[in-house]
Length: 67
Image 1 (cartoon, rainbow, N blue to C red):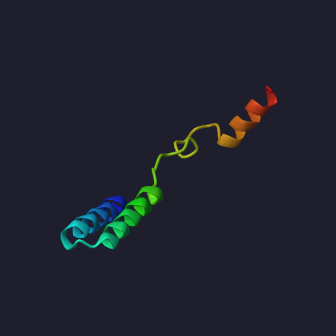
Image 2 (cartoon, one colour):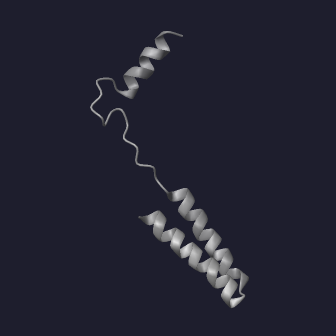
Image 3 (cartoon, rainbow, N blue to C red):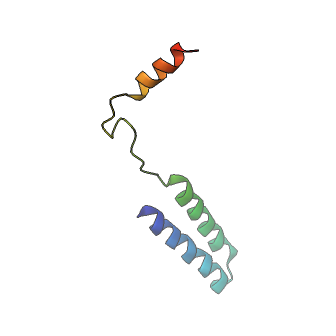
């Protein structure tokens, strides 16, 4: 939801830059777009959250013993 809101604001700023012929508004829009891009979280569930019997720490311990 936050990504959609920030991208809408960014597109609005870029559109205003062309309408008002003010280049700094487009720069603000690009900055907002970069903030939206880099603050977007991908909520992927981890193996630990899925109810797996093996945690990440146990998997790392098993792999490190075989090397």
